[in-house]
Image (cartoon, rainbow, N blue to C red):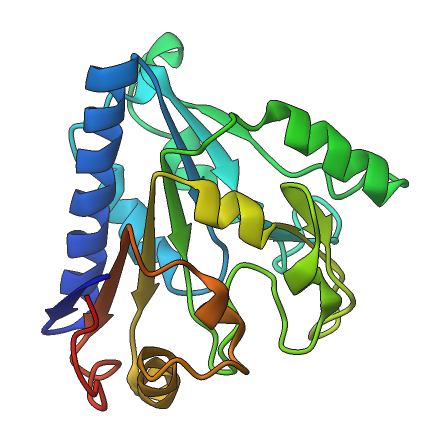
Length: 228
């Protein structure tokens, strides 16, 4: 695990976006295409805005969601709106990325997870993750059996009023690289517990090898050490 501490949330977003862009360029250079999955939540918006300004081989890039709430199209609870900045890139349409949203409105959610699994590559190049104040990442709520789900895509129980579709631990840890972006003072205690291997935190199930953690100084305030 590598840890980067930025002076503020905006700089952390730029650090994260620059790293993602490098991984995508490397993937295209090595394999001719890049696949990346982005998480929802409040933190990614700054990062995605920065990423949209960077040189990225978008036409060779396929974008997936790490997680999505089961809610109607256009509902503010949906994570899909975060990807609007990539849909609206000032590029000719053939040069824009391919974006696959999770099919959360399909009545049979198990069938929907199978459909999304079929779209995923055998191994994602990059997975971006957030970090909740309760230690969840992706849509793996504390105590939810989804943390042990098989396959690549699963459905969690209701969490904060919404059932959610999510990539599984298997899919996240199977990616070539992972990046966790966390900012703000409410994350400081959770970051500390994660670095100390607290088994009660869902984020502790993320493989440390091949993972970059990007924090601002507030989130890093109780960082006990740099675990590599």
